[in-house]
Image 1 (cartoon, rainbow, N blue to C red):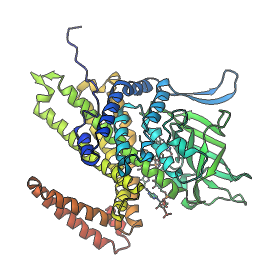
Image 2: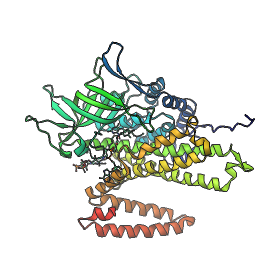
Image 3: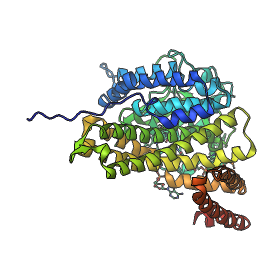
Image 4: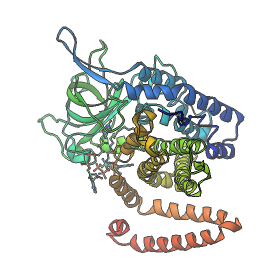
Length: 497
Ligand code: MFK
Ligand code: FAD
């Protein structure tokens, strides 16, 4: 069979390898403890977490409907590595760090930096963490047992994860018309939920947030968005049996196979209303902001990981008389991937920075508007870009990029979902317009004034002068157009065009 065997690319410490992340943190959170903590965590990712993620891919979850004695149990069986990832997530404070606020307004940047290192190795455990973080955000000010403490706990035995059950058969984007689940009020003030949730990820969660329509005393419900309320419920009852939740089946998916995604029949699920009645969508929007930011982090992290692996491979693969790293055309391809990744990274960090400022009460009005505008922009842009960069990245390995047990195809499959869940690209584009319309254009004013300030800083670097001038002109023309449009009732449609 010949004597030559290609040396494989090795995953090195993703923190020490990431000069942009290190430089960003040195500039904004210049603490030695942060660099050394993330350095150690990066080592853990490379030496321990990465193989756990791989184990989850190789041992996907399965559903046991009945036990040996014919009783319905609906047990979702996950592999030991999935359970270990939950423990590690708790100990490392991957949700907690966002709420402990150890680094004040920079706490979100710190937390998301850690998740950014964790996500590409973690066998999609980043998904339950995103939803758990989103649920904690919604619940933090509400007196719901000890839920907030558990969702943000560093103690693995205490730590709960949360689901986010929004999608039904009729509507995942259009939940306002698609939601058929009803909520009947009980004498103890709780509600009994009845309906069918079509996509529920990380279904082995402890608790969930979900939407339903309250049935009034005449047996009627209100249709549309105004009829939806937000509910919180445990997935499992005290006795370890399900809380009125039947697992219909697990989805057969293109990617994200490490994680269970189920169809659920809610048949009397006991739940508590979290929002005011009829304010379900507006209330879950807080969760969506968090999960969309996590999605952005996962997308950029996936791009960074494939770039790191491609660079490493380019030092090992020898073709046409030299290593790949010495072929200018190959270097140009990798440089394009690097630029896309860097752009995504800076956008991601800016949104995380703004979130941290909002949560510590230090954000200006301009920053609040920017956070609202940039959250969907970052999610939609990086979600799409991840698929393109991952696809290019696989090609950097030639035929080996297509071979399953290199672990590379999984990365492309998993990236494909990033533009679909948590709002598809077009639905998020419409959310951008919603943010413009709801703020009477103020989110755009914030964007233009912030962009002008940044351009004036960049203008002090002589090499950037031509680019700054061109961008400045484009920005003024866009600004004039927006101003002219904002007096017309059809402004958002014109902007869309
Ligand atoms: C690995 C990392 C990460 C990920 C883990 C993920 C696991 C997978 C989880 C999922 O996929 S969960 C399901 C995610 N589903 C979506 O993202 C739904 C996509 N559809 C939309 O986002 C629609 O635009 C939406 C459901 C919000 C439309 O609903 P409506 O009711 O038709 O919208 P409407 O009437 O414009 O808004 C109702 C209220 O919500 C308004 O407030 P007011 O009543 O006070 O005026 C809106 O302003 C508010 N709202 C809507 N979107 C908002 C928002 N507020 C703030 N931010 C937003 N983004
Ligand atoms: P549709 O809304 O039918 O969209 C179909 C197409 O129409 C898309 O291209 C969309 O962009 C476009 N479209 C829709 N509306 C408009 C419009 N107004 N203008 C222009 N174009 C439009 N959901 C949960 O609630 N919880 C989960 O845990 C969860 N996990 C998931 C896991 C996986 C692996 C996947 C794939 C999905 C998961 N989802 C989950 C569902 C996901 O959030 C939805 O599939 C997604 O929001 C899209 O909804 P839909 O499938 O109904 O598509």
